[in-house]
Length: 372
Image (tube, rainbow, N blue to C red; front, top):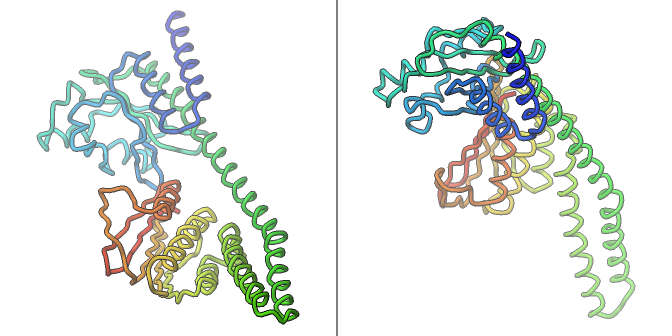
């Protein structure tokens, strides 16, 4: 008994060290899962993070071929017995699952060998009352987990939940620090560079009116035009860093930014009630990039934006459409521009998606879906 307790303490220590050293969620959880399976002599396992009842496979180790076929298709199903129990609030502690629905479905579909895996234990990942997902572990021909095994798995799952909470808080702190830094930079640009450019424009205008030399007048005119162009671009940069009216709502910011760019915006919104500040900020940044792309590349000055918020599922969709020149694009290839890649990265940081539909001469449509 004493040897068993020492072994379990060593396991928890090793897992804690891996979690404390990790900074990237996916890599850290993959390493923890692999180590857990090694020291417990279990063979296979996987981790789902679950948000708004939607499971996302974040880590897996030595899955049987039946679960890896068709690029992990069996693991991408939104429903299984353990996920359903979690979503129904019935999974509050480590549990023996009678058998695995994913494996049952894989067998029915004629997929590859299940390699003896029929059952798994399911453990909720939690920190206090906050739930993050589930940990599933199993081994060939193992149909039951002892209370001691489940207790160890619960301890590991609690450590993982604590780390997920820490990472979420760290990400939020970084996001707030980034917003504060953007606001500070925007203010400094407005107070210094923006004012200097305005002064250069006025000085050039005054110099042009004083001199009688046509050559000098043309030079001053050129300086004034350049300073005006730079002033306009500086104001646009300040807008990108800190929209002055986002506190008045996303719709107001979109309208004012489109006016500044000289775009004719048609906007349809069903509701923006109860969306989070982070979601609003993400939508704003993506729409901002899309409007700038429309101004620079579409060859026309009209843009349509539609925003639909499903409050029951807490999913918000924004579509941005122009009717310009479009471009050749295939979903299977890398996004062709930095702006589009930046928009997709913003969506993915909020666990969302971004899809592009376009072709030459038929305009461009971008669809963003986010969980609120």
